[in-house]
Length: 429
Image (cartoon, rainbow, N blue to C red; front, side, top):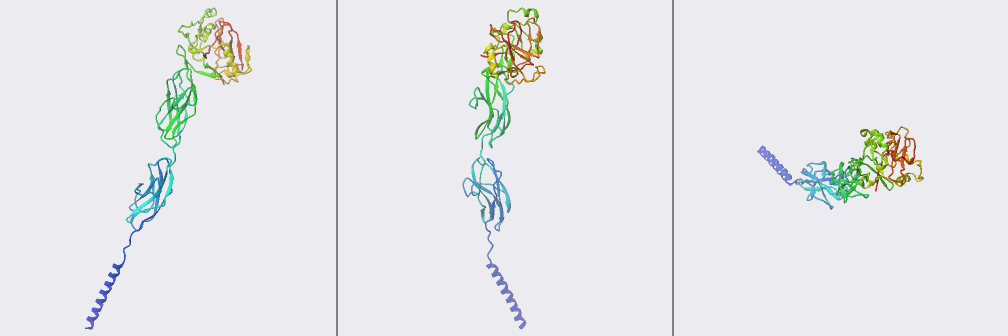
């Protein structure tokens, strides 16, 4: 009986203990998740359209982070209801790339993290996208110049942080041409490009600049100048050069017809040459293949004084026009046989490619590029190629020529025989 009572007591105690434990457990509150804790990373890699930021989630709030990223806006306190990235899940650091931005614009950004308790935000940071500015470029030196065309271009070394939507070269007859003047359109983007200029007029000085357009506006490269060439009636092309207020052909004339199309007699024999009373021409040593392209033709005085030897709009220079040229290069020049002591070196091609080796001091700073084309004497003999150059003037009454020599820095003004054969230059009307 006593034993049964003891068992009953034990059973009651166990039951009561179990009940108490159940009651205690049922009274315990379930742990509730909280919002995550995180910070926003500093913004870097800022351009006109893109920036890089991110965040660091240090506490998940007792629940898994299901989504994270950054949100941004043009005003403070951006949220995931607006523009935002999605950059995986979980705690720790993450990186976000913000795209589709507008140049030169302030933005506000926060990192965010979402768990079952909701969405938490990091601290707010701000940044401004970089502005688009004018492009940087240079102009290509013109080449392949003819009487109506030229080749140039440019090199865009910096796009100004914006897309280059148009590029090319603009030109005109006055300084600082713009895209409201004649211009080419040569694609898009930065880097080098080539432009073909057309519709030019012969014997004109043109100013040109490369241009590049982005959303900031139109930028221009450095200004360059070039002269279109002159064509004679035979189709020969000549470069031109401006010296002071005068515009000259940069090469000796090589035409075989007058302006009106009349053929100029080519006299090769010595005896007929010495007795001429009308215009004539020849090539040095009667060899056009060797001498024509470099030195041009040799003419007698009658040809040059005809008034119709040069291309239309040009004429053979007078004695006074020659002297004006010399005076521009030497203010102390005198209208005498030794016209100048120094101007010759400023007119002669420098170096010894064509002039004899003692052509020291020649600078060609005028751009006239005088060459030693020699001459034909009154007996028809050719001489002095490589050592001297001779050029007629067009005056009927004073047949003064200009002479340049390899061993003399000046200019000689000499009155030759009518039947000498000299080179010819032309000056613009």
